[in-house]
Image 1 (cartoon, rainbow, N blue to C red):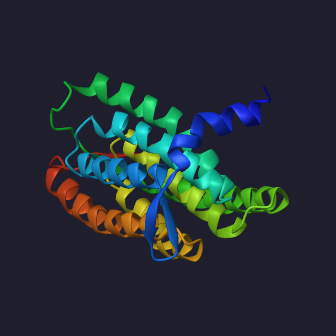
Image 2 (cartoon, rainbow, N blue to C red):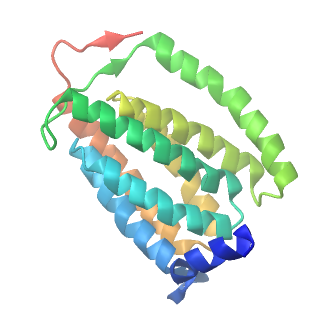
Length: 215
């Protein structure tokens, strides 16, 4: 059996249409992505280590969803997030007992500047690649991918600036998914946006005094 046919059979249950939200044909992949995504962000807001395994499940569901919507960077990003999620899970386990409050830090100016500088070449390179691959929104898909990778790295290292990068990505994700008739996914990212604001405030309150600044 060809690999493509095998993958189609494997993911078929997740692509079953359950109903409609506006023009969006809601599948199991989108519904479960909604549920695990909301749970994962809330766990991150509360600085609970379970945000990583729940996030990994979310990556699987969104990989199937975005591949079907021809948002190839978002689909490939889920594979990167799987690896980053496993790395973050390991780092947080080393930092304390599961479920224990975590220590937050600020990223230093050099770290933030480096991440912002990297956004330009990464976005440009991905835009060119995705355009050639037939992505349905190459520039916006590339930009949100670059922002999300930076945000995930900052989350793994417990840097409070993670929330600013997630907020920037979510502001773009909401209209992007609406334009692709992924109405339920757009709604969950709108929820994510609000929860990011809550997370930012919560992490600010939990920041150790004096704040630890690293390069």
